Length: 198
Image 1 (tube, rainbow, N blue to C red):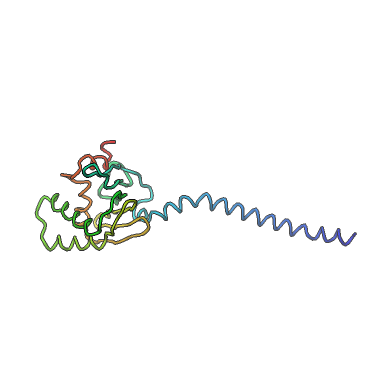
Image 2: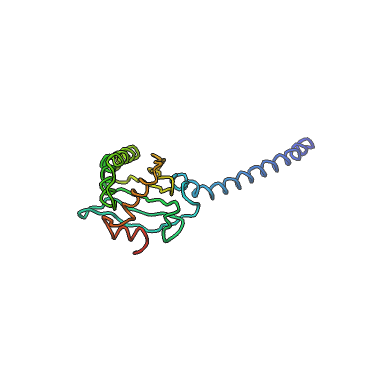
């Protein structure tokens, strides 16, 4: 009996240490679970890393053609109204299937249409090549995000990763002008993106 009592007393410090370790593990797991949702959301949207830490939705709207929904567009920036001297992002959630070549050629057509002056042929060819390299084929449920970097150019992302970085400030301005400039193909969408109408 005395021997058994001594063994019981010898085990108490070990039990206390195990309890302490388990408590520390529990606290660590609680902290991890608290932080994980925000980190996971950020990791799932790598384009946010190119923007200021605090961003907000400036506006959003739906692009339609002949009654069909083409994409849902959302403009993100650090402040509202939009300050085009600061980085911002245009997020497009597609509802239809479009090839990368069609995305590039349509973008160039819109850039030409909206330009106040003719754009040289070699410049347009270079821009189309850059956009064709950057784009991917999209289908219903796919996402493309363009990030405007003032004086530097632009980056293009899909849902998971950066697709391309284009170091051409003039192309970047002309590209985002498709949605934010005038005369816009869809003035209602432009105003919604800029937060001018609900």
